[in-house]
Length: 332
Image 1 (cartoon, one colour):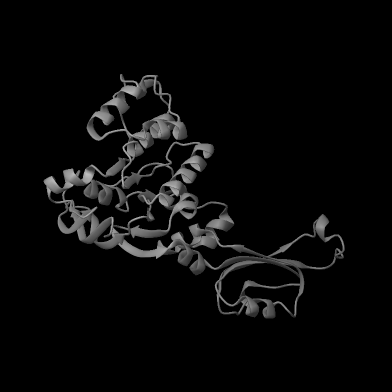
Image 2: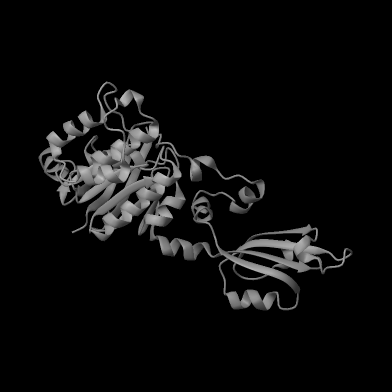
């Protein structure tokens, strides 16, 4: 049985079609990343799965329970953990009091264990919490009753890099224990480290569902080559070359053996072809060095949104909404 099954799910707010005929499944025991920029419709899907709103059309089941049936959804919630985007708690309560309240509703057999992982200051009132401590308390309440499925909306928002790393380790351990994790994110480094598969959402529609490895294969390799002589981007007439750039550079200390009057060209591009063809192409050049790196997952993501990864990389910036923003989803 799939942990989550969505069939033709649509949520129409009138002026905004937030989810448009979505169909996909999340397998039991996998970590599934739900990707897209702010406003893509991620939070709308999550709110529907949790029962905070009803779909306009279509169906969804969570742990085999129909989200449109209140009685079934109540039964399902016994085995579900939920972390909303920007969790909020009673500002006058302490963290301990918040957890006590949640424990009275859904249990807390893993509270002590999860507190050791995330360590929010539970004896201080919430009004004294930083955004990171609020997020850590939210993570504790989402996992402390040992749910089979945990649904999280931007789970690392507000966490410092050390805590993000701890979160990633924790999610991997939960997967090994057979738990199912569904998380929305536009922090692609996070997705790459913990997810088995991803679904990419654009303007309310599902663009693709693929394994992370498949996306990385699709992205190919990022290639940087420095050669002696003049070489232009138009000279890279080779299948699999994408977004080539060519620039003349000065010889640095590492190139001390090159005469000053020699021209040095640095060429960069993404390559999805056969590496042997690439090596043959540069076999007739005087190659100073050739670096191959795994292309950033951000490049793949941005291509789904009609962006030019090479242009962003050359400008030293990336689309902050699509790739690196840390806030919650601004769905209608």
